[in-house]
Length: 246
View 1 (tube, helix red, strand yellow):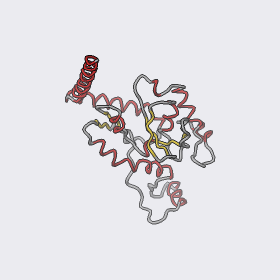
View 2: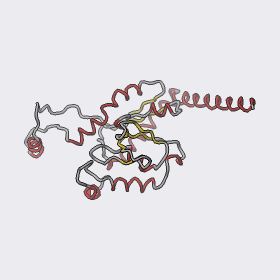
View 3: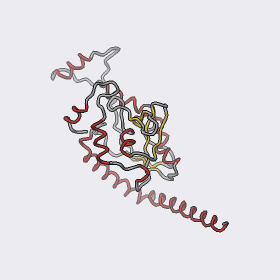
View 4: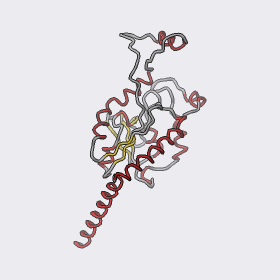
């Protein structure tokens, strides 16, 4: 995703998207190969938006690379992925649920640690009135003496629209009693800056160390483990009772 040549080779006539998706598919499939979601060591799921049925899809089995790809397919950039199970068109899950802590909760998680890595949108945009000429914007950007303007391009508008419906949902999940919300200091990075992957990962790692150190000293981690221990004890007792009844 950081190679200009590979992006150029993946350009296509923009019927559904700017890129065909073949290059992106190849990169992801090379990482995950033929692995299936249900075979992973740690239970995993992801969410996509089924635009054929206008519904949220939760994937807990099937081709890992395909559903990972589908779950990050932004409109305009990549075409929808056709679900190999039923042929439905799948897009980025963020269109319908950008913080699936509620899904994890419904699947049995007692505590959910939600990591918000979405980019912060620029709000101080240029007020250009009732109409906008692209030629005017181009001139402003090419002329070194002209006052700089902040105008969203088509891709940026698409990205913002993708997550408008999730803002209220995000706030409700953040304020729930089962969710621990973490926002790493990544506001200086923008969406799709794949070339800064290692730098962003290090920022997240250092922030995570700090957060967990605070949680450990304040008793948050102890409470999480206590809840888990109580659940395991309860399950063991239930199994014992069933055995005694038999």
